[in-house]
Length: 93
Length: 478
Image 1: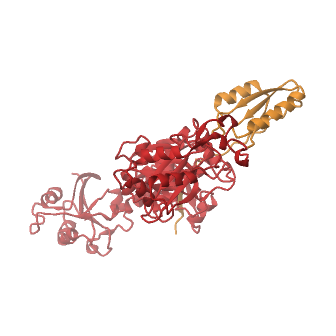
Image 2 (image 1 turned 120 degrees about the vertical axis):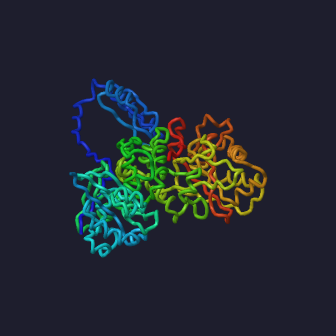
């Protein structure tokens, strides 16, 4: 018998594991981004988060993906990275 | 003086070769250019002449033999002349023997070389030639079962796959004129580039025949168009997956089913084309259940969901034509769909009755109180279609009458109406609200001749973002 040769049906890529960024010690003085990914009732969840953070005197800024069905456009990701230090993503239905 | 040699390829099964048996003896004894013989099928044939048995057909492959007998003349190791079959003048010219075959007919055709028999050529190319394949080779151990090896590597959707050997991949690639290294697009969720070769490998694994490959490639192209939203369709918690409808002459040519059990099992093309697309998403795109495929329940259509439209009635406008493809062209339409909701109506006899009846079932898509929230596909069976046809209703008429029957007062559909929280926005209470957008109801004809049953395929909820997600129709390039 002879060894059989198959061909790899995958993209032949390997994931690159990156270390998480350390969370900030405090939210005071930085901008908290609130990203609505477009799922139903995401906005209700983020309204509540925004209200709670506002009560603590924290600065928030709202963002929205055009649809939950696609990855966020590059421009939006760059805008968030430029304007916010941390982001809360509303994943809920 | 140059060194001359003659090489002859022959097989016993070929009557022209056996007719030349005594002539071969004369060639073997020639002083000018002694002949050497390769036989393809019987080690005893021409054994007295010291013929080499080309059991694995390597010599036939390397010499590019297509017909036996083939006579080749070499000078100083280089081929200078070749003929195949028996052409007395040619054999005399190449051998330099004026009286060669004096008692034989002037001409006899040869037979096909064993090295070019169907299925053999690709094996020989895989074994002895340059395959040109770029995908990483994966060696399976001598005692390993290749099917199990594919399971272990995570290459399967849960059913056995056909192991993608070089010979099978080369055969598959012969199904298209497109180059193996052509990039078809980036496959979500990993947005990994997919070449024609990678698509062919997955088509082999799915069980496709080479002639299905153009359909697989067109389906992949359609799936990768941003407006199809394959990323979301894969990642969704919903039931949906790509439903492929094939239109045009290719459907008949490759033996697709649009008749009895068209949405079910049993037809190789239907079964494997849809599966190939799903395997590409899994293997190339990295879309695996429990990872980025987050379906709460999923559905059996995510193994494969592909069928052809019944285009046997010239009065009917096929789906692809209705969506802008020229008549006579082949095309795929990809629809983001769930499983089948059966529609049973064995009593309606007029088109008006049947329209009202269909509307009663179609409003249930997603939720009876939701509107312009998902698309839907209606697979109209022959017996239901016959009611419309007898009344002279064509596709446009059926669509417009259904849309009219599916338009309801907004006050009955708003949140909380009829004692149900789900529904449309309260601001639309004063409107008449259509269930689907004008292009959101896709009607396809399919099914066996008997049965007043049609099928409704609910669309994916991602369809509510109409500008972001829509079905896609793509012409098939062959």
